[in-house]
Length: 279
Image (cartoon, rainbow, N blue to C red; front, side, top):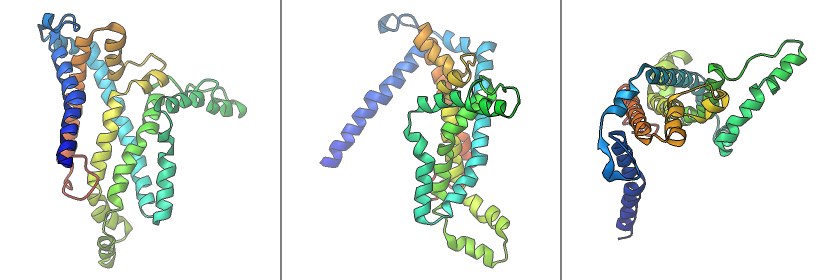
């Protein structure tokens, strides 16, 4: 009875805070009119047609471009980090993971603000550059600054899933490959990497999803001149007051994210392996 009660509580929570809000967003996306009075809403596809204006398509493509670039860089940086941590003994491993996730305990907004102090015209890096006798560099309010902010904030989401898979790989498999004459590179390419694909797919998804929809990073490190898809949604809901169009953009973003999850699942051949997979 206790488990059944918890199940009912979970179902109630899901209905109230997940399903109903999603249904309202879906309703607003297909309607026009005053959202305060649902009975006056009129069915329309105008919100979706409006999104396919070249201006908004350009914003979407830029968002996807920056998210993909940051995801690839996170993978290039994150895999070696996860591999190094996974090969340490348990005490060192736990300490390294703690140090790695420690910045995540700080508020996301504060972490991003800190990069403004580092990259700004009078920031720490430019101070060092000027001390060396060079003129200050333009390090902020550009693509590089936005991507750097994404990498800094989302890199742990790449490392942790890969790490969780790597530590579960049976060492006997690696030893067997070495006994058969495989060098370290062949062992990695033939054993370690294939068995860690599920963690890579989870990490790619966990980085790409927040990166493509972020609005705080692009607003702070882009200097307000960056309009990504997350900023567009925020603008429609908070400043313009067009919840119908904002809802349509949100639904389109959900479809893009679900599509990306589906594509990563297609390439994930190790979904039945223990750990690392999100679905």
